[in-house]
Image (cartoon, rainbow, N blue to C red; front, side, top):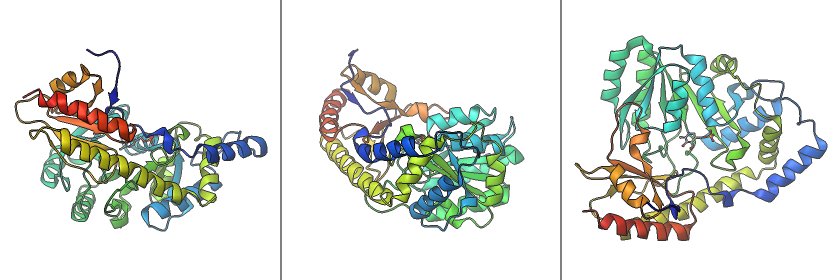
Length: 369
Ligand SMILES: Cc1ncc(COP(=O)(O)O)c(C=O)c1O
């Protein structure tokens, strides 16, 4: 096995070269020298300034009028998911997730001592028939359905408008809340994804979460919960961190106030669109015919499937021996362990490295069958 990692397609992190370091530094410097934001935030849902600015950002990102009463500032989308799950479930309740889903979210829900149950997704969203069967099976124990409806991690799919509406109708009929994680919603490289599920919601059943991690900088650890005021009132009581860092939320607030955030989102879109295209072109050139994959048009990941009878883990091990790291699809399932997929991240590596790495991976894969 190679000791050094030459090509890391496994890590699903942003590329640090996108961070507007000097601007963030200026905001930090000004806050450090001239403001009181070195104190506890004092208010669990976030300061009025932070909520006002995040409400403004949310309105811009999702095209929906948003008020301060609809926002809780959190320590990232994962902390939003954790707080929402603790607020809306009791131990022993059921949280439904997509099969596959974002692996870390499963771990976080399990910390609430709930049963996490997977329901398959298709190319246009959740498998509604399978969801209905699961809802019948678990009945009123189902409290939450966690969805990543735009440029899903790990598969890259987007829910269609019809699928979103049908899901909402099921949530109403079976009395559960949809926790929609729209981390990748703004990162589209062709057509924009459909409007967020919350935009179709008339009964306050959708809680929308995301953060600045993938747009600006993960280490800020600033995200949000966006929901109706009564839902916000319920969820904020479960915020167990003493308040998100006032210093970091002031940095984000100053950035939004400056009016420059929109340009940063556009820069992120252009930046990752290039990597997406480089990756897709390299895969077109180098991957064997038996590997099934498609370019997602947004987000961070390409999801690839190996043929029946072949193990994705064995492909990953062969790649590892050549210094190429890939995320095993099997790690993205809450219950079933499906060993027929690979998740390749195109966001983290520089373009040149993507090209070289995919060429190297192509050679390894061509030799396998
Ligand atoms: C779907 C999804 N949600 C949330 C996160 C993490 O977000 P945050 O840094 O805001 O906690 C990620 C990143 O890996 C992700 O893929």
